[in-house]
Structures are given as C-alpha cells and as structure tokens.
Image 1 (cartoon, rainbow, N blue to C red):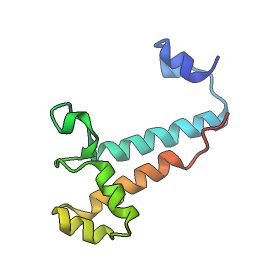
Image 2: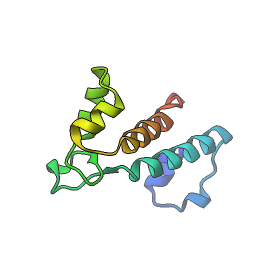
Image 3: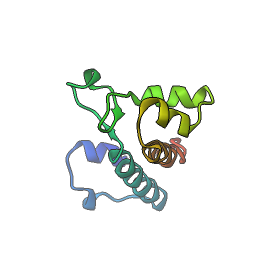
Image 4: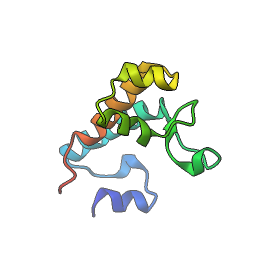
Length: 104
C-alpha cells in the first residue's frame, strides 16, 4: 500500500512503513511546510482563500510573478512595504518542497 493511501485512511504516521527515500521526502516536506507556514497564510476571508504573504493581502503568486520579471527581492520588499526576509523564507521553503522528484 502506498503511504499516501495509508494517510488517507487516518492511520497514525508512526504506523506507516516507509522506504528510506520516502522517509527523507517526508522529512523535507515537513521542514518545507514548516518554513512556508512562517510566511504564508490561507484564509477564506483574505482574497477568497488564495495563499498570501503572512500579515498582508499580497498573493504568493504576485511575489513569484515579480521574481519572474527579474524584480529583485529588495525591490519587491520596498514596493510592497514588506520584509525581504519573508520573501527569502518563501523561496527557501518552496525550493525545499520542489527539490525532490515526485516520480515513483
């Protein structure tokens, strides 16, 4: 049985038998999500549940779009009056989540 199927059946994480690579992936996922939870929030009352930078109404997608347009972290922080460190943590958390392949 795949570990995600096991999780969906509400078994405790301790009872799941994982391969070493799956254990590594879950540790990285847990760390990445912890990092992101420090800078991202999702509430239905804020932009209809769109992920935003914590304490703001700035969508994460907007930050990523700005970065794709070669806007620097410092410029984004100044333009939106936010802390540049929040953006760095966001990028780091996303990098951790996306570092590993999702192929079986």
